Length: 333
Image (cartoon, rainbow, N blue to C red; front, side):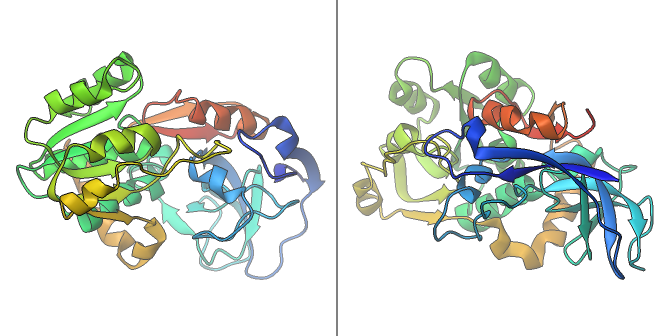
């Protein structure tokens, strides 16, 4: 059996180019004892992938040159020499950008397609949903009646953050790119307002939407938007740094210019990495699954097709902001 996969061929400078990838097809080896063969069905397409391609210290080891590109995925067990996993089981794990993955299954999580669609386990019930849950509730600590602002509000993490904040009784204002996304955030996700950062006067529109100031800001984008929100924060505000997608492909990254607002307002800015909360994943997933079943949480996802070969272009679509909800690559061509 042959396995088509994508390797990291060179490290990007700025936006990843075609030269960063190497497509190859290899023969799959025979399974050893305790190993499992998984056929990949869906891959999670995440902004974090850009950081994984960089060399240097980070919260996770970078992908090495010549390695299969790291990606979280869901697949079906099609052969097993491990008593914990049977043929037909569906599992979630870091399967990589490849048609098939062989593993001893130590980090596998079984998922049930009869309860939720498989892509939901990569989005709201996966790492992006968990990031939203812990980042907002444990780091942002919103209180009923407070104003929560979320950038990247139509994306995989931001869309969940805003919905959880509404469940907790907050006023929620999103920031997104384009009127269609803003309409989606308000009409389908239930935010109180959403500001189009591509329109004129982000500061004016955001101030009007947050007449009582900003108590919690969940930042997914960094750059100018972070600077703008910092001018509107209240005393003891909490700023959650989840990502900075506006900076990932920049060769000259910019930090916050208005950081003295943290001093003036005795506010706190703190980063969130979901892996720090691994011990409580089960509790969070159970709670979010309950909210989905109760109709309080919308688990939307955006599916792209094309399989392994489509990965570079789909990753580009993510950074171009072409998704609403969690972006997932379907691996069948």
